[in-house]
Image 1 (cartoon, rainbow, N blue to C red):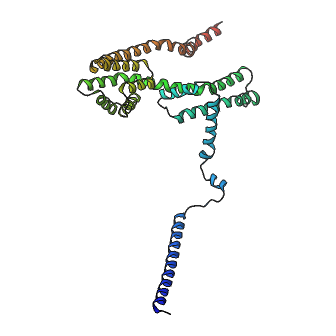
Image 2 (image 1 turned 120 degrees about the horizontal axis):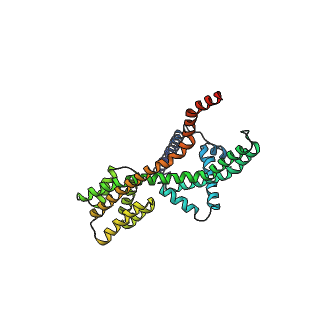
Length: 307
């Protein structure tokens, strides 16, 4: 046998053996690394046990709210969901999650009304009878039926009131900034950083829309739709007309600021004049009876004892 062939064969055998040993070492090293990564983790073999590791909110509450939301979207009148979405936009919470949560709550309250009727009229846990039982039942049913919508309307009203109170001050600062030589967008930036509030939040969103490519007219009309009060509508129309006809924005904003201050003063005077009328009902039904008892009560007792 040729010695060269023997040497080549021995070398090839040694190489194959070394490759097999190194491959086995690399495989064991990879297995040890995988096991090291799995330390501290609990393996779950059963699918049911795997689902039980999820929090209760993901397993029960979220699917239940999703089912109630789909039910609410299916059986609500046409345009109701759009109306709710618009109200949430006016309230500053125009996210899809807010609308879905509201629809789920509405379905829950409607489903709870028969249960309340059965509880109050059938079981009667409070032990009431007659008119008091019917009155309490009616108040509970009315609260369940009108409560969510009333709460949403209250949020819209509160936010619009805050915008209305903030509008004259914001317009004053905008006017001063524009008259000082700043552009309209720069004046808005300065106002947003100086005066926090719902109105400046909407101004910040409007600036974001213009910087994203929308025109000033489109952004301002979207701003007016998100707030939906006559004073903001008047301001938006004045600015758009100034842009269209080339009128000085500073002069227009000065006129708008003066008008808003006068309007705020008139609103304060109106509320002050309504106060005596609103105070009349609690005075007649709460204050006057107690006053009559204190003032006339001893005299009536003396008259009774004398006669």
